[in-house]
Image (cartoon, rainbow, N blue to C red):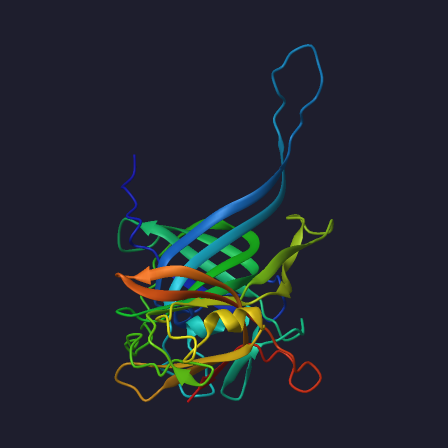
Amino acid sequence: MGEAFISKRRHLGLKIETTKGTAETLAAGDYAIIAYDIQATTQFGRFDRDTQKAYLSKLPGIVGTTAAQISFTCEVRHSANTTTLDVWERALQACGFALSTSTLKPTSNGDEQKTLTIEVALGAFGTGTDEAVIFKAKGCAGTVTFEGRVGQPLLARFTFTGVYNGVADGTLQVPTQETGIPGIFQGVSATWGGTARVLSTINLDVGNSVVLRETVNASSGLLHAVITDRRPTGSIDPDLELVATEDFYGQLANNTSKALAFAVTTGGSTRVQTFTLGDCRVTNVNDANRNGIQVAGIDFEIVDTSDSTTPDGDITIVIS
């Protein structure tokens, strides 16, 4: 009987693949990401051999496709120069975002969308070789939600789907983690339609649809994950205003276009990440309250009506 694995002692490493679905070898710097809530699970397909015979007992099933899902949460912060991505921001590239100079925005072009090799250490018991079990996946693509709330940093919650690439005994990496304390989600200059409103939360969901590309010529039955669609949505909770001041219900009824923008600063740094959602359309106004204060619980979709001029302009993140 071996030692107990401590689940808190886990880490995550990721690297953009040169060829989609071909695993990369990770270096120490690829583990510099600061992450919470790391989870790695198998998602194997099985063929159920439910034959008809004299008895109701079953024959053993057969393993089919071998997929994996990996999820984790990161603080939204930036420590590198304005044209170099931190490790966690590389994960955005596998969520359909493309980097142009210092701007990240979604792309509909498959050749601009990246895939990742991801490794997760599933706990450890010692310090040395073969102290942890390393869960591996390749060809990973995913989606991400952003959660901004008073009193905490802006958080990015990632969910990746990819091809299971085995497990192996290994060693925990102890890299130099990325520097820069995330700014708290306060003083972020949040505006709705260009006007600052009193609100405590901003939630964004990029809403990617991710599927696995199947092939009979791979032993796993899979090549890599592919983003096939995107439907971004979000929500905010502004204090209810007089109709003459801010008619949230009228915005719903009239399908009014409203821009949402905010900016987060990395603590102890001048690095700023400005989020702009240029065209939001209210889809529901919920009757809600925040600690007894009446609010308009607004759900919205994020659209882009400028396809012919600046396509994929629904969400932009500018690093400055």
